[in-house]
Image (cartoon, rainbow, N blue to C red; front, side):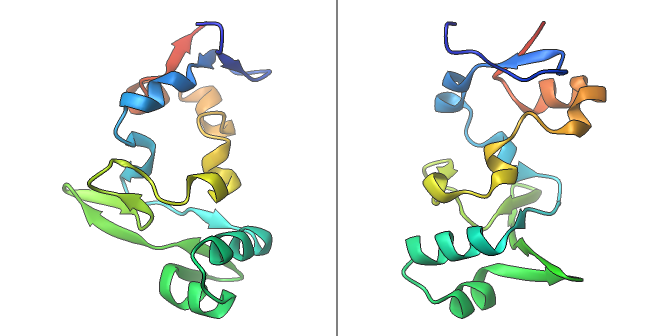
Length: 126
């Protein structure tokens, strides 16, 4: 477990190798927002060979003054529209939003470690 990721102030580490067999638990489940910045919108649109406008209209919802990625029904809950249900992985992994890149090191989980342990098989309590 040499490749454990740690972040200051978090009572756990993360083993990214767990992603290989996880089936995308962090991409599916309860409904929620997946916020995207203007830069992320441009990068994802480019990866999908879409104009920014096409990408926004097809894949995003505007909530007040910002955008979130749409969700789809998945196994009694919801999944990110970019979650490949057959391969059980992200279709835009290399340009995924920073919210996805920073998981599981979200401020919320500092106080809710049991929740992240349940959601993510790569969590190792310190």
